[in-house]
Image 1 (spheres, rainbow, N blue to C red):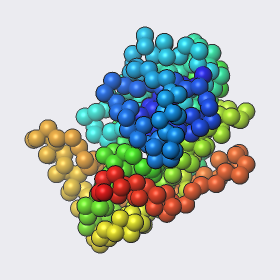
Image 2 (image 1 turned 90 degrees about the vertical axis):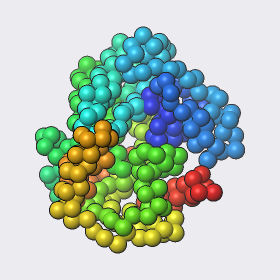
Image 3 (image 1 turned 90 degrees about the horizontal axis):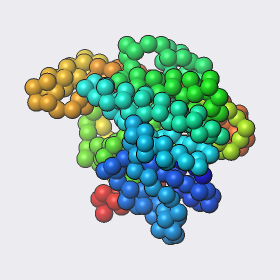
Image 4 (image 1 turned 30 degrees about the vertical axis):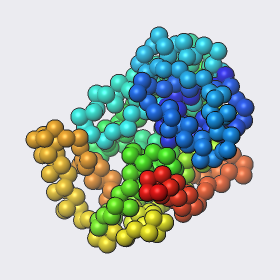
Length: 336
């Protein structure tokens, strides 16, 4: 039996759909209050038989730090896909990020050891890699916390727990996706881009990074788990794209106005300070931090040659195609 954590998220829900198509026996963990019906809806995007496929999943309520229920969820498990994580760039969430992402991952690793799990796949992020190289690959190592977000710091700590598990005998593969594009989650992650562009924004920043279709992330994860490859990490991005180019592609698909103004470093520096003041005065969640303003200006290039070399025939979906299909789901769900 396969265990999936974070099954109600973007990657997790698409992973569950992929696994159900293969007839795999699946147990999925969800937190109290998670929207399981959203997973059911995502299944319906791709199959007329979605209800039957969704019905094959055994759902277990368990927080990553709820060891009694988490231990029960591991009974009879042979393989684990650890997709669960808290995503926040607000420094006020740092302690919660550490508790969920680092301590929670340590619990998963320890249970993999205790239950002699055959293989673990951990979903990390390109944010845990170094950024001081012209082209970042799997050997570009973390270079300190100065410009990394609290989310990146917590995910790096989580990776250290996974590498500890490898040292203790857990066969593991790690994937480091870029910005993941895919449908179904319009109020979080890359889904926010589609809503932002549709409503109209005059500003865009100069930076850029790596993007990847959610289906490619899932395909890579499943294929890696079905090989003898172990104790390796893989960057999953389909080339570098500027934020302007991504927003332009989304604008065309949604028939929205293109952003015309480029935010300078001065205005971003002013904006994150104003955002900090608002958070202190009104208790609002941070929307723009110093680290995020740095990221929005930086042009980061990533190499995904390793995954294409190690998985024969693996090819990435064109980012334009991913944006096109995701835009259609967005328009149908949000603006129909």
